[in-house]
Image (tube, rainbow, N blue to C red; front, side):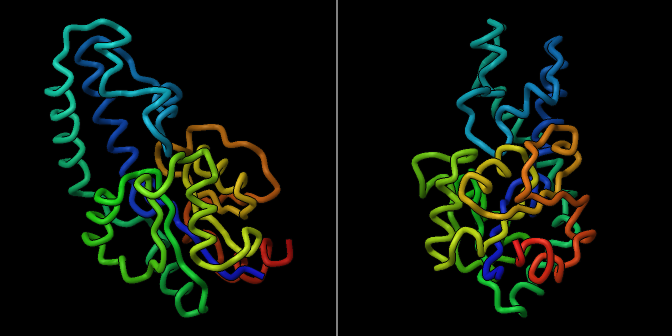
Length: 223
């Protein structure tokens, strides 16, 4: 029986990820470098350990770039792009239905808490989340399962009683590694990526396309 639903944040609740990619892609292009989705995906839903897009041009390619200035330029571009972004389709409806159904609701994100809080307040949805786990709370972010394991422990449910809502391959890997079920709702950027096959995951274009009753009474509740 499904008792909890845990949302990823970036790219899932609001598509911050596509805006980041476009900001980096355009800045790289000005320096004659093509930034492909596959290369950029190394930092999607996880830390910048494998690929740091702020420093790559200077440290890996040796281009004469002021990294601090480059970082500020990227962040300004991202902020401008995010001014037109809204909560993703189906998110508000799912939060309301989950609350009405008595499900425990959590959030597990590889981002830091200040970043998450900024947008939860902006979108006016903070009240729905009983538990929030961020990069500030764990030693390893996704694809490591620690964020999800911490969230389900705080919610007081078993892993197989919880469903993760994710948009990225790293996020889905973390949910599966934690023993959870997962609904994958890729965004404009992550739908171009390959996801690991798993009988614990169901893919939909958006939550608007995934019947809430199917989540609570269908494919996962009987698994």
